[in-house]
Length: 84
Length: 134
Image (cartoon, rainbow over all chains, first blue to last red; front, top):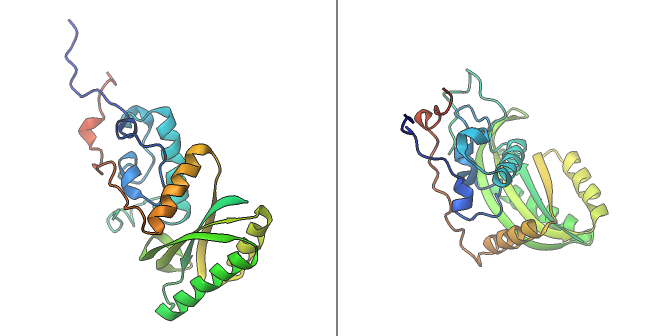
């Protein structure tokens, strides 16, 4: 007997919202592709499609360079920093 | 001529007047090197994600412009020399999709378009993730 699926099927949120470019300055666009420690979430967990995942990766890496998103969050910063 | 976006962070210790003169001087450099400014977006003072030169805050500004490729070298050299600039980044927009996004961003910077609200920012939670492992 097939077990009932416990979770919703994942889908690409960007495809649904019909986004064709992800700007690194717009944090709301890639917020949900970041983990609590500001790592880039893998595709298997977020459900992003390949095209959009590539855009997200580019945007986040640019945002890190210009200090909009931290490169690392360690024990010292984990409480003090929050995305605004 | 290529489309460029130039973002820079100025030191937070500068006064409002100094910031405006600094921005004007950057503008002059772009124009003097044969560029044309399409727009300027003022992000303003905000907190940095990590310390740069022991600063925790910085003043952000973005220029949208077109310029010859060689002139970017000169522009970046001046940014490196300047002590008021904490960090900067130059981005080119070339492909079709990028150019469309660039035009949109310029319109937003000039106040012609209002930034539309897109994805709702719901952060992913733990329970969304642990499936299909077993």
